[in-house]
Picture (tube, helix red, strand yellow):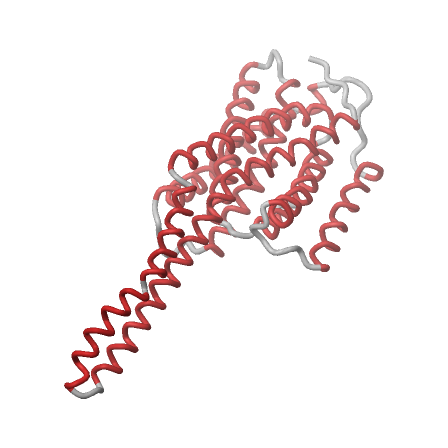
Length: 304
């Protein structure tokens, strides 16, 4: 199948793919943010109540025996005074119930829907331009849309500092320059023989990917279904970042090869399997990232 590359179409699809990735992340990141806020408030309320009880017990233990009756009365009055606090806790519980299991299911469905749309756009977008241009443009789109989404619309993160804005703009300008000084777009149909000139290259890449999968899949399963104390946010930040970056590049490269291998059924089947595995890994890594990493505006620029 002959594919004629188009620079405007490649850039447009890359921008759309980055936006879909941001929307996919936001669908599950926002409920996770609300749950973290509720948990932090509950821990703060319980710790402050425990400290207050300890202080009252210490005061009353040092007083005379005649003060015991007053202590009983004051305990009852304290319970009465604490009623508004309990009411406040109830409001927090009601806030937590807003992110109910049903709404979490809807959030996961929305996350998956936008991920599928973004994956489809990535698949076709990689056909109409070089991967070395498509991937950076997609990432810049994701960086800018992440900042707008999480800092200005959802307000789950603080507004970016002047240094952060300057850094993001420098990345955007550097990526725009790739359009003029980067890999040239082929104006003629691509010859598959020019891309796949050796089966050894694909097999070697597949072996490296299998090794990566053997490492990343157990980690993703442990992070998603267990609660190990060693998996702190900093550790997850690094591991998810490496996983998502590696598999995203392999996924885009595999998508690029799909229309070029028609008739070469062994390589075609291998590339399709490679693409499906890496797309699933990238989606699941992004899903874990949206729920376990609190700062998306810091994480996403590092992916570039």
